[in-house]
Image (cartoon, rainbow, N blue to C red):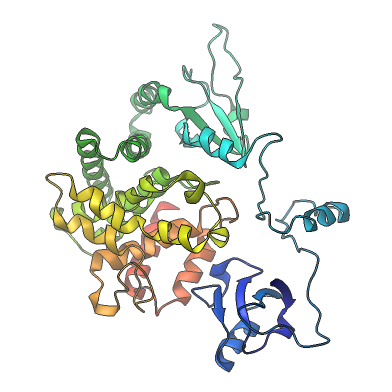
Length: 429
């Protein structure tokens, strides 16, 4: 039986079945384990969490007289009104429902939401310029609510970008059938940007086109033409970073309100290449392998059913968790099918979930057995993951993510992390 108990009731012999906080705020790599030592118990009590969940079928129950927490506690984001007592009581009637900040629209299931989301492409709001005409449809996404936008029109009756649109909450999305129109729009913006903003506009076009290519490749992972296009994108990313002496402004997506594998893949590739360059790597072959391997590091996700891929991790069954972890080997097998892919490309793909302690997967590599490319992507991958929201997980700030990484010197290379922080610092100037 799963119980929520106060931190004061925790004792050796209990089986921890989750913390009442995000995993990155605790000192534990896993949130499902038996408390076997006083050291583990002390770490739990010093972690700052107020409650944990235990499984009484796998470990000890609370002592007689200790109280368990029977009403669910809901975290409330700053500026958001706390739920009424009646609402909390209603939630208690269905404890098995996953806790999510963004409930699906009425009469729509989670699977319906996933289908709609996967049929669209998230675009960067910063790619739009006030006053310009758009000839493609726009959708706004707030949580799990996706609705078409009705745009204001100019005197000619053409739909235009307004300040209100650019300042609106949520994300913007377009239909896949409109990606070529969006590409044409980006070219127009770049052409009209002027010399002062030329590089910024160019980077935006590189990044947005990269997202389109990755989404296309993941939908048809056996297409050699799309793979060749991705290789060209990596070359463009490398050239841009070198030309701007390490500046990555507009090459990555900053405000990520939900997880999209294509956005994440592009971000990790840009972060990894920029970090490698900051470390003094000059070989075009090495940079290309790091960039392409990072861009393709999650291509194995294309083999995972959407209902598993988008499910909160804490709700995954052991079988589903195995499927999710299997994306590394699946990705390896997919990339091996392509001709002309350097073998070194597989290194960041295979090692992006490894760490210095050897507690990562799939190979459990430790210390010096991790390749430099693996050490880099292990940092950039977890950073982008921590700073991206998804169902059941609220993103943390870049500062908090870097603070967490800095506190895990036993897992992540401290020297590489310093260079990565320098890269991020340049982009914020």
